[in-house]
Length: 184
Image 1 (cartoon, rainbow, N blue to C red):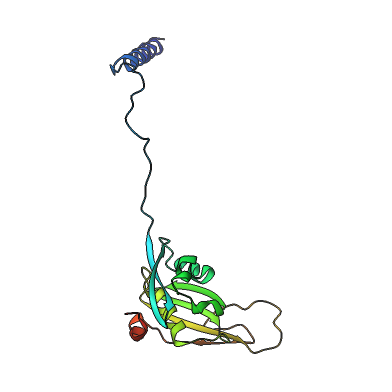
Image 2: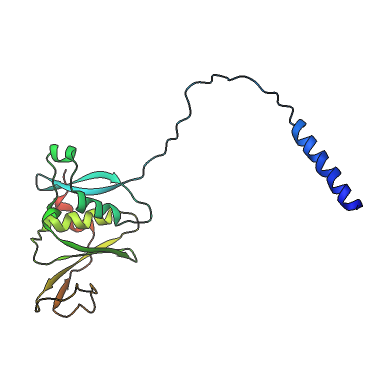
Protein backbone atom coordinates (compact mmCIF):
# COMPACT_ATOMS: atom_id res chain seq x y z
CA UNK A 1 0.00 0.00 0.00
CA UNK A 2 2.90 2.41 0.71
CA UNK A 3 4.29 2.11 -2.82
CA UNK A 4 0.90 2.85 -4.31
CA UNK A 5 0.39 5.86 -2.03
CA UNK A 6 3.93 7.10 -2.84
CA UNK A 7 3.23 6.80 -6.55
CA UNK A 8 0.02 8.83 -6.20
CA UNK A 9 1.81 11.56 -4.27
CA UNK A 10 4.61 11.79 -6.85
CA UNK A 11 2.07 11.84 -9.70
CA UNK A 12 0.09 14.63 -8.01
CA UNK A 13 3.25 16.69 -7.46
CA UNK A 14 4.37 16.27 -11.05
CA UNK A 15 0.92 17.33 -12.28
CA UNK A 16 0.91 20.43 -10.08
CA UNK A 17 4.46 21.35 -11.10
CA UNK A 18 3.76 20.92 -14.82
CA UNK A 19 0.66 23.05 -14.56
CA UNK A 20 2.35 25.95 -12.77
CA UNK A 21 6.06 25.69 -13.45
CA UNK A 22 6.23 27.27 -16.86
CA UNK A 23 5.19 30.70 -15.64
CA UNK A 24 3.66 31.74 -18.96
CA UNK A 25 0.58 33.83 -18.56
CA UNK A 26 -2.08 33.88 -21.23
CA UNK A 27 -2.16 36.91 -23.51
CA UNK A 28 -4.48 38.19 -26.19
CA UNK A 29 -3.95 37.77 -29.93
CA UNK A 30 -0.73 39.41 -31.09
CA UNK A 31 -0.62 40.67 -34.68
CA UNK A 32 2.71 39.71 -36.24
CA UNK A 33 2.14 40.09 -39.97
CA UNK A 34 1.01 37.67 -42.62
CA UNK A 35 0.61 33.97 -41.86
CA UNK A 36 3.58 31.74 -42.62
CA UNK A 37 3.67 30.18 -46.08
CA UNK A 38 5.65 27.03 -46.73
CA UNK A 39 7.93 27.37 -49.73
CA UNK A 40 10.03 24.60 -51.14
CA UNK A 41 12.23 24.63 -54.17
CA UNK A 42 11.01 22.32 -56.91
CA UNK A 43 13.94 20.29 -58.27
CA UNK A 44 14.62 20.91 -61.95
CA UNK A 45 16.35 18.91 -64.65
CA UNK A 46 17.24 19.45 -68.29
CA UNK A 47 15.74 17.78 -71.34
CA UNK A 48 16.23 18.74 -74.98
CA UNK A 49 13.77 19.88 -77.62
CA UNK A 50 14.43 20.89 -81.23
CA UNK A 51 14.28 24.35 -82.79
CA UNK A 52 15.67 25.11 -86.22
CA UNK A 53 17.20 21.64 -86.55
CA UNK A 54 19.26 22.05 -83.35
CA UNK A 55 18.90 20.79 -79.79
CA UNK A 56 17.73 23.37 -77.25
CA UNK A 57 17.93 22.66 -73.50
CA UNK A 58 14.74 23.25 -71.50
CA UNK A 59 14.09 22.88 -67.78
CA UNK A 60 11.53 20.43 -66.45
CA UNK A 61 10.49 19.15 -63.04
CA UNK A 62 12.88 16.48 -61.76
CA UNK A 63 11.77 13.36 -59.97
CA UNK A 64 14.43 12.50 -57.36
CA UNK A 65 15.34 8.84 -57.39
CA UNK A 66 13.84 8.25 -60.84
CA UNK A 67 16.21 9.67 -63.46
CA UNK A 68 14.15 8.32 -66.35
CA UNK A 69 10.94 10.01 -65.14
CA UNK A 70 11.74 13.36 -66.81
CA UNK A 71 12.21 11.49 -70.09
CA UNK A 72 8.89 9.69 -69.71
CA UNK A 73 7.29 13.06 -69.06
CA UNK A 74 8.91 14.53 -72.18
CA UNK A 75 7.74 11.61 -74.34
CA UNK A 76 4.25 11.54 -72.91
CA UNK A 77 3.60 15.28 -72.77
CA UNK A 78 5.89 16.69 -75.45
CA UNK A 79 6.61 20.41 -75.54
CA UNK A 80 4.55 22.78 -73.40
CA UNK A 81 2.36 25.46 -75.00
CA UNK A 82 5.06 28.08 -74.29
CA UNK A 83 7.74 25.88 -75.87
CA UNK A 84 5.59 25.31 -78.95
CA UNK A 85 4.99 29.06 -79.19
CA UNK A 86 8.78 29.55 -79.09
CA UNK A 87 9.14 27.24 -82.12
CA UNK A 88 10.31 24.13 -80.26
CA UNK A 89 9.13 20.62 -81.02
CA UNK A 90 10.02 17.00 -80.27
CA UNK A 91 10.83 14.33 -82.85
CA UNK A 92 9.79 11.75 -80.23
CA UNK A 93 6.14 12.34 -81.09
CA UNK A 94 6.43 9.80 -83.95
CA UNK A 95 8.15 7.06 -81.96
CA UNK A 96 6.49 4.34 -79.92
CA UNK A 97 8.66 3.83 -76.83
CA UNK A 98 8.12 0.47 -75.14
CA UNK A 99 10.34 0.81 -72.11
CA UNK A 100 12.91 3.09 -70.51
CA UNK A 101 15.18 1.69 -67.84
CA UNK A 102 18.36 2.61 -66.01
CA UNK A 103 20.95 0.09 -64.91
CA UNK A 104 24.42 0.90 -63.63
CA UNK A 105 24.45 4.40 -65.12
CA UNK A 106 23.23 3.28 -68.56
CA UNK A 107 19.83 4.39 -69.82
CA UNK A 108 18.29 1.92 -72.27
CA UNK A 109 15.41 3.10 -74.44
CA UNK A 110 13.44 0.36 -76.17
CA UNK A 111 11.37 1.56 -79.13
CA UNK A 112 9.46 0.30 -82.17
CA UNK A 113 12.14 -0.17 -84.85
CA UNK A 114 9.78 0.67 -87.70
CA UNK A 115 9.56 4.25 -86.41
CA UNK A 116 11.44 6.97 -88.32
CA UNK A 117 14.67 7.38 -86.34
CA UNK A 118 16.83 10.31 -87.39
CA UNK A 119 20.18 11.44 -86.02
CA UNK A 120 18.37 14.43 -84.48
CA UNK A 121 15.97 12.10 -82.66
CA UNK A 122 18.89 10.02 -81.38
CA UNK A 123 20.60 13.21 -80.19
CA UNK A 124 17.46 14.26 -78.32
CA UNK A 125 17.23 10.88 -76.59
CA UNK A 126 20.93 10.68 -75.72
CA UNK A 127 21.38 14.29 -74.58
CA UNK A 128 18.13 14.31 -72.57
CA UNK A 129 19.14 11.00 -71.01
CA UNK A 130 22.68 11.94 -70.05
CA UNK A 131 21.45 15.25 -68.58
CA UNK A 132 19.72 13.24 -65.84
CA UNK A 133 21.44 12.45 -62.56
CA UNK A 134 23.30 9.15 -62.42
CA UNK A 135 23.07 8.49 -66.18
CA UNK A 136 26.43 8.40 -67.96
CA UNK A 137 25.53 6.77 -71.29
CA UNK A 138 22.47 5.90 -73.37
CA UNK A 139 21.77 3.01 -75.69
CA UNK A 140 18.69 2.32 -77.77
CA UNK A 141 17.13 -1.02 -78.55
CA UNK A 142 14.91 -1.18 -81.63
CA UNK A 143 12.26 -3.89 -81.52
CA UNK A 144 10.41 -5.32 -84.52
CA UNK A 145 7.93 -8.16 -84.74
CA UNK A 146 8.68 -10.52 -87.64
CA UNK A 147 6.71 -13.65 -86.71
CA UNK A 148 3.09 -14.77 -86.97
CA UNK A 149 0.40 -12.84 -85.13
CA UNK A 150 1.48 -12.75 -81.46
CA UNK A 151 -0.87 -14.20 -78.86
CA UNK A 152 0.71 -12.26 -76.01
CA UNK A 153 2.84 -9.14 -75.53
CA UNK A 154 6.58 -9.69 -75.81
CA UNK A 155 9.00 -9.87 -72.95
CA UNK A 156 11.54 -7.15 -73.70
CA UNK A 157 14.82 -8.85 -72.86
CA UNK A 158 17.74 -7.75 -75.04
CA UNK A 159 19.50 -11.09 -74.58
CA UNK A 160 16.50 -13.36 -75.23
CA UNK A 161 13.73 -11.70 -77.30
CA UNK A 162 10.29 -13.30 -77.26
CA UNK A 163 9.53 -15.66 -80.17
CA UNK A 164 8.86 -13.73 -83.38
CA UNK A 165 10.60 -10.55 -82.17
CA UNK A 166 13.99 -9.20 -83.19
CA UNK A 167 15.96 -6.49 -81.44
CA UNK A 168 18.87 -4.35 -82.57
CA UNK A 169 20.79 -2.83 -79.69
CA UNK A 170 22.82 0.24 -80.55
CA UNK A 171 26.16 1.13 -79.03
CA UNK A 172 26.28 3.24 -75.89
CA UNK A 173 26.48 6.95 -76.60
CA UNK A 174 27.02 10.26 -74.80
CA UNK A 175 25.82 13.75 -75.68
CA UNK A 176 29.29 14.67 -76.92
CA UNK A 177 28.61 12.36 -79.90
CA UNK A 178 26.08 14.99 -81.05
CA UNK A 179 27.90 18.24 -80.30
CA UNK A 180 27.31 19.49 -83.84
CA UNK A 181 23.53 19.42 -83.25
CA UNK A 182 23.57 21.72 -80.21
CA UNK A 183 22.07 25.19 -80.60
CA UNK A 184 24.69 27.93 -80.39
